[in-house]
Length: 281
Ligand code: SAM
Image (cartoon, rainbow, N blue to C red; front, side, top):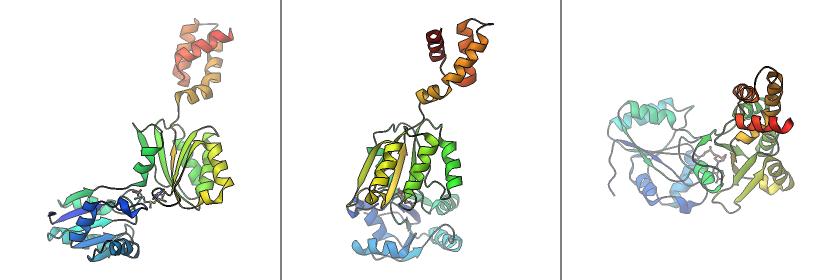
């Protein structure tokens, strides 16, 4: 296969199982002038496995400005460059954004070589809604900042996705219980595509117990998918306030009007408030 030169190829690599590396991905890596890798020692093992021997350059975003300039020069000179990260799809909680942006801005072609990503792998098997989802990457490491972030996400109606490491998985799930309550649904995908892969699906309280009771389940890499905030949760939370408003307004207004105003104030559906108010009479 002939690949155009002067291109930046963004190549996805396996997230565990080497069998998931696409043939096209391997062919691109074997044909480029240079492979820019997040960690050259880590990627050398992968390339060695496939007998790929191309020049490797370490590229990560923080220390990367001079290397980025060098890669951009190469692209301008008509060389082809592949960008890979340690695992999965570059730029997804991995380096590459600044390079791709700059390559686009200088008019270089940027071509994706799609493949594994922990985010989509987990989403595809969780059994949670996928029509809309929100990717949040790694939550903050410090507890106060993490809890603040989780509070901000509490009302998100779409399925949301977090990455987490073994060092913080239990703390993170305990914080999720504290902020979202014990009943919110969660799916945990651990060590996907690897020998000790495991999945958990249930409530947050059950997930905390699953992790606490089995130290093996706290090892490895994790994707957490949280069920979105549901209208019925919202209703359960705000209905008492809506009914209090209705009882205040009812001496001045008909019930339908009082329920409509209470719905506007609290966000709970008017029908729900009306029916609950009738039941209370
Ligand atoms: N770029 C990668 C991707 O496309 O998924 C993600 C890189 S990020 C630095 C690494 C995190 O991804 C891990 O801490 C974990 O949260 C998640 N992850 C990567 N591989 C995984 C796997 N095999 N099983 C579960 N989670 C994984």
